[in-house]
View (tube, helix red, strand yellow):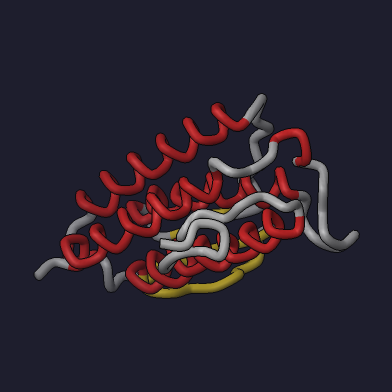
Amino acid sequence: MPLADRLIPEFEHEMRTTRRLLARVPWDRIAWRPHERSMTLGRLATHIAELPRWALRFEGDSFETSTDSAPEFAGLEVLLTRFDENVSAAREAIAAHPQERWGEPLTVTRKGAVFFTLQKKVVLRSVMLNHLIHHRGQLSVYLRLNDVPLPPIYGPSADEAG
């Protein structure tokens, strides 16, 4: 079975879960951060909304991350629309990527220096999907600290049991 056929159902599940969490971001508190060295709530939500775009990078053999700038969103609906667009484009890119190219290396540079080189399938799973899930966990803590009820993620939350 092709990698894309195995991964897309998991991708879809995680993106639905992520969208439910992003939809809870209190836009009037986007400047909040739990610590001075932490990202703001708005920056974290933006990073999560943009992470699916990494799937668009698999066509080439390298890309530079420092050229990625975080967009500023005018509100939660704009952020959710961008997330939905990114998820749709990522799904299409994953489905269209040739099976034989998933094992090819992808080099990611940051400020001109090699940050890492990994197989494209590893970048898809570890950097895009697992990285997004990691930050989604951070977002759930940010929301909890702001008294925002959490949706179910991998089962009922304390706020929405059952």
